[in-house]
Length: 78
Image (cartoon, rainbow, N blue to C red; front, top):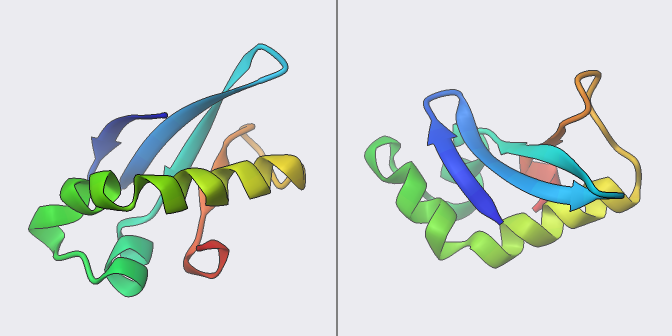
């Protein structure tokens, strides 16, 4: 479930073992993979929500967490 967006990336939250996991996707990944323009990044997130959520799920299932406990979706993950 995607929750918020900022200029550094789009953020989504998931629960894993009753803990929230911050899921991030860079604006670069949105531009490269989905052709999003800088002023329509959030629209791209909404349009491609399922693909982004599936990528986050795969990273979580692989225990591929960043040092801060979040997951970072990169172009290759999509």
